[in-house]
Image (cartoon, rainbow, N blue to C red; front, side, top):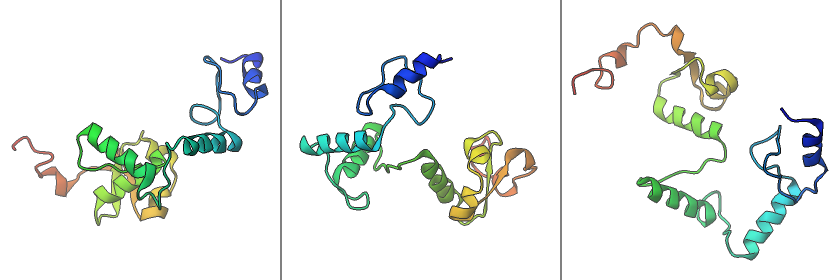
Length: 148
């Protein structure tokens, strides 16, 4: 657990200075950022010609990143999502097809922590797996049978 001196050292440093290894950050993901540090980093990347603009994620650095990830994973294509929840919701919408319900593990992040995001964003009703007694269309399908 962090002591007051450990947490105050991170708060008293200038915004553009990186955290010291071993610092404990209680907010956000990873390295703390401020608007100034983000703009500064983006300006540096643009000045070094390492960042190319895109148009709604078409072209530029985003497309380069997607192509690189597809190649590294041996896939035809890859799609970058700015957040994990966005990726989860779109994946569930795609896999659900025209169905209005998805069965999720009760302990899953999307079931426990995302509230009614599935219902509001894409019309899916999340049902946790303890409530499912019988999945008749899938129970006899190739996905759940031992014979292939």
